[in-house]
Image 1 (cartoon, rainbow, N blue to C red):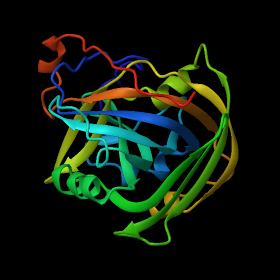
Image 2 (image 1 turned 120 degrees about the vertical axis):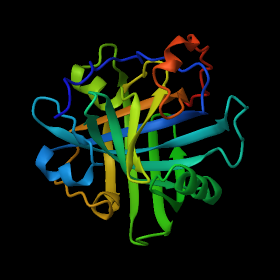
Image 3 (image 1 turned 30 degrees about the horizontal axis):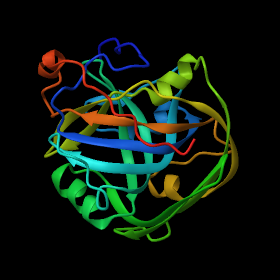
Length: 262
């Protein structure tokens, strides 16, 4: 059984001063469905269980724009490091009480980063045709999977951005303020920490959601999403696996706020 999970905090408690990776996540839509924890337990890595809020856990579908992925503090790459992405994710907690996400799939529009993430990090990235269309208050995200499949996996998501959230609820923090990633490498559970400024969140109205990504990831939901949110984005730092506590003394980073369309 896991220890009591660490508190949900809107800002990271472990700063990352010497990052392994830097990037920005921009123009994010957060779609979440409430599910029974028993329905997703088998899909999580050994050593983790579903993270819950009031007895339920959540399935997340999150399209966004990845911006300038960089390594070891070097400047981010403009072309290869910038692309549309859509991830399907679950919420996890490990035996040390660390909360995180587990990615069931990550569709991305650049083949080289997909190959690098699959080989280097053993993450389930797939290569897809993707685009993001923006107007003043709407975002439309489309994807169609190329490799490794299934080729039928696709999505078209459109939202209208509403008012800013000046005081997000505890559930909204639970769904968005996730400071680590659980995944398995060579049969061992790994935890990769991240840090970024507090999310700027907006209410959003779902205009369209036509997708098969969840089913392709082994997940089955019904009805409209329980929660739909938008954020213009944040700059992000990833720490080195296994160095979470050494990073704590590295000092607070200076954040560079990414460009925004809002």
